[in-house]
Length: 489
Image 1 (cartoon, rainbow, N blue to C red):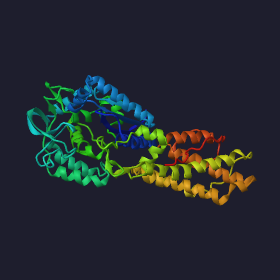
Image 2 (tube, helix red, strand yellow):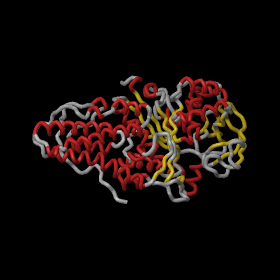
Image 3 (tube, one colour):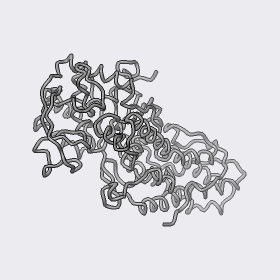
Image 4 (cartoon, helix red, strand yellow):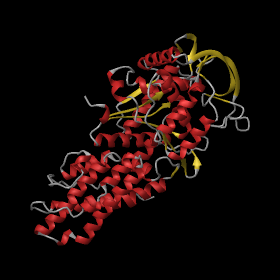
């Protein structure tokens, strides 16, 4: 079995199943998938988790509006998420649902561990509650009397509740942030979290008597556990906490989340883990949001992007490439089909597709032995690519890969292999074919289908990152279709 040093555990949030997946969900999945695939390229034992969050008042009301039984409603939407991720070439190792028995059992054990530590007590909660966001807010947090997250009306609620002594962990959290500078990522978001924690933490209400669709509180079955508390525990449920699997993979290496849920993952979750006697994750990375041609995605505006429709129109790999190439991970981005087409036409088709087709066409007509010396090796900044990926600078890594692709195209234009023959042509083709083989390895996390097609055309098997270096070309070329074709508006 692999040891702790060569394991890698990455998670996405579990997505709230009150509606079908959209571009924002897909972005989280694609970047997490790329990171997981990269670590597999390194030869590590990877566990990549996603899933669905299926409890809470909002989901019960959504099912009621559609006149569906709530379990049947969440079953149907969970399948929609699974189908979407399969369609986007997502390589998750598990899919956890909070309505599964395995999740409930770990939640019970986790809550009991917090209770044994003296961190839970009974009290009464009064506050402003936003049903769509399943979150309480103070008077100071409200914006013009409305929810500061979604802008909707809030309602005053007062009820008996059990509380978690979150305030107890304020100093320990601040110490952890200081000792683990890479925990809060990207750096641009760390100051906000640290300052809020320094400003003081209040104990957290973790149960609801009024919400019936949820997991019972083990110490008092008249209460259900607050959805945001039990949902976070999914990262341990999928590992069957206290098993050999959880011993290997915990703590998680990366929790990939949207910036709107950073507080829950960077403050509440590590405090809960401290209470249960566990280490926090190594990193919480809060990525940005996507607008659509300058506007926030909204059903009422009618601009919600269907990721599967985009993948069907432009290809899965073109969509994956665009989402990562367009913006640095952590920044906000703006989606437009025009921008996607430009990337597809000018980079995927003109650079990579054209390079592969030209080289393979010439190679098919050459009947000599392919061998030579690596003249293109100096154009490949493999250490830079590895550094970018280690730092989750995915767009930077792609930029370096594309620099190499452009260098290969320049090599073709300068050498003009169609005018060569004999040893000179053999050397040129050696450089270009080995470059394509290496490119196929490097782009495989980003565009797995393209990598598979290119490998088939080169007649080689997919390789690990350790094989992304010039050696003897052992493939058998069989030119196929263009990897990408330009698309007119």
